[in-house]
Length: 426
Image (cartoon, rainbow, N blue to C red):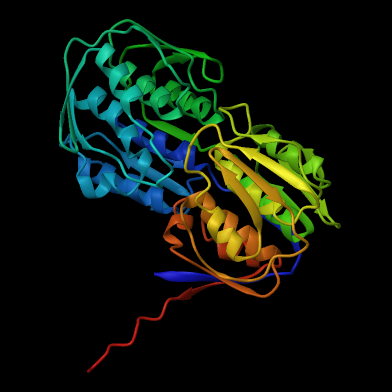
């Protein structure tokens, strides 16, 4: 596996085109199962997680091809209803296939999903909701066996506005008789993108973006063509990179309103940010200032997926920035790696206090998870000297060729192959 080698201290200047959203394309790829037709999806990023989702579709019997940024899924034939353990372990969001497999096949066999180790993320909300819709569920070790009975729409009240649970219920509800209401639904923009796709298949779905979503069961058999929305977390990551390294960076093909809380925090820190239409420009000529309390919350609050990256930018800000992680208890796994660079961070439970230092220095690091790995890249761009980051398969799950993007705007970053250790002949 390769490394990222980064020499910091160079401002970022130029333009970055934002890719399609990882957290949107994955549930939409899963949703292609329910309509039994040809689905043409544009603006699909080339990511490890997307490749894993395509492998799952092909295992189930679908025919999938990619032409540049377009992925074509022919789901007219689905001859399996299981997802093997090796594929489930590739990504946490693989559980999103549960609802559409049940809707299409009437049964499903999945295993406990893998992905980044960010603390307990139980899928009980998914399973409890499916049970209420008429699905019989039996756990056998790490396997989850599901059998659809008389599936009928119901009111489903979520104890927490889980994105994955909301999506799984929406997908399963297309096969239910009657109306399903999801109360306290997640409100993320990716939910709205999924709803737009489902409507194109013929599904009767409304309310996405609000706290109550309604799905009326019925046939979904139309061929579709859909463009994946821009990735708000990728956009937030590159904003944080420019804020940390300095410079003048423009992001194109993005939706500024989707990551407005990140823009607000960076503006509070002294970054000059302007948003017009689908373009955002950030200019940073001086050292950032400390920012007000950063508390992660479900959308439209500050995204947990952007906390690590903003923390990296805060490491060299003048003053103290306090972070409160309200979603995942292990979102601070990157802290130890940032401290290798000279960052001053104190963690107590879900609170992290960042005392900004004048400069960071290069270090050897290992990516701990997807967004934590991105935070290390950001810190390395701002640091003096050379840094290396290993375990970059985590970063590749959510960023398409991050080294090409950043080197294209002035960052000194390259991907290098890790040399195999020499064999000991003695």
